[in-house]
Image (cartoon, rainbow, N blue to C red):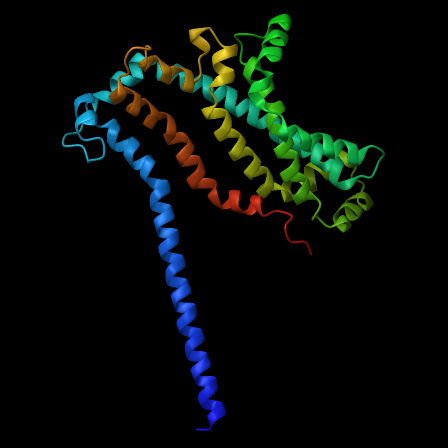
Length: 290
């Protein structure tokens, strides 16, 4: 074996060792990071099966006995059934409105050239910089003047308005990568703008729209402050408001709170697990063209 061959073999071995070491470190880091992310959920679920005494005595241990009654009591005390219906109505309606308006606006901004287009793009992006909670007072005054307080629309409209900038931003990036030849072929076949939008752009933009829908739904489902300010009718309270009944300002029933939060988080976990691939595809949409 020549000196050159020996050197190449040694270099290849060193590279393999470095690559293996890097891969091991990466796997260990990602495993540790995953455990850190999962632990709060584990702690929440295990605490839901404990009594208050056990939570205070051993907050981080596995429950010694399963307190199933926490879930039944939490369901009854907080009226979680009605709260989940209210949250579902608000979240699904606002999500559908966000996806449709975001897709429609993104279609116009990504496929057409017109005056003030750049201004509109900047305007929508600036919407992402507005502190949402700084608008509570003017929004409350507006809702009160038009009679929308204590209604589903008092939440659906603000939710949609504040989620639209990020929805438009993600969808524009995806639609901009769609080849214009598809539109030209559709025009030759006799399709108008609406036909192109519904038959071509929407189906091709499913990954981006799925990401928008899932992120929006999770945000709407867990939103608390707007619901607290705009909803006073107990029959219209959403899930986050119902969770607050376990704390009266002097004490908190942690066992029931954990049980109720576990029930509330189940739909969001299921949705994320089912559509996590769509989220990843949508988040990188438009990053690579061609």
